[in-house]
Image (cartoon, rainbow, N blue to C red; front, side, top):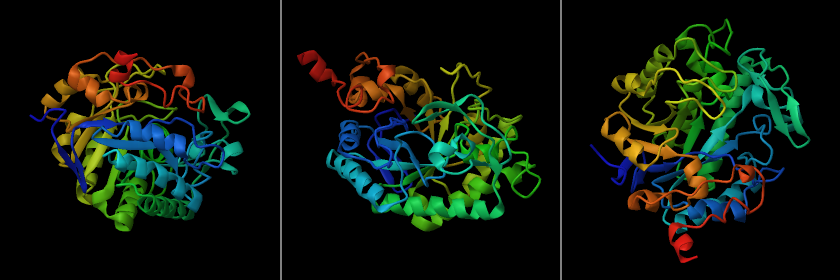
Length: 362
């Protein structure tokens, strides 16, 4: 079986190792959602990963509900992201843009309109806004015209990602955001062709993937799911049935790689995972499977040896260990991250974590 330091092909991407940087919202793009030099420095520091998946990036103002997160719907954002991709490529890395519509998790203060979802539902808990935390408001059900329009927004954002120098895109269909709201029967109560049966609930994400593949080439497209854990009030009554059929649909569409956030223990938010689905999907899907959630070097190597996963993505460890690949190779200890600075803005807790060599020299 391949190891973490073996190469891997993900569609058009050639990876030098199988240690992937997972998407990590860091909130450094400002109110206009424009990437900047500080973000370019942050990503370039982590270019030794086999692949960087960018932080979740809004496809429209309507779909972006996290303060200071970046977007990909206008020219200034394309130019800002070009700073990032150029820096990563100069450092020898590869990077794809994760494309995001948050659906019912967009507060009107940020989306500038009523939120939209599969059905008229309200997310639990509170939204982050520039004025502090506020209760979510009820979303309006997406019309078929909305679905066509949002699909077009995904395609436009994907084309802008390529124009900005990204090596591909990842469609965000996980963690209780818009596409996940359509997938799961705990949030989708529609009675038209986008709701009810599993086949109908797969329709929106299938149409988005097909349209983006037509727009930039399917060999440049990946997708992320969170199949075995309820997130932000979104869950499903039968995830094994849903995601095995989804695996078959991804095979039909020739999607070259998927990332599964598949925890095996309660999450930091207290969600209890159900049975993993990656093993059940494997017979139906021949593309590369990237697994994510709470791995270190030894556990990631063990998971690869089981033969289901083709790569492992690491999230929080990459925040405080820009040289994570080197540390795993050396079996060196990992530095802890400062949670208080994850979304704080500025350079502190962002680009000032030392590499192992720098820490030893100090």
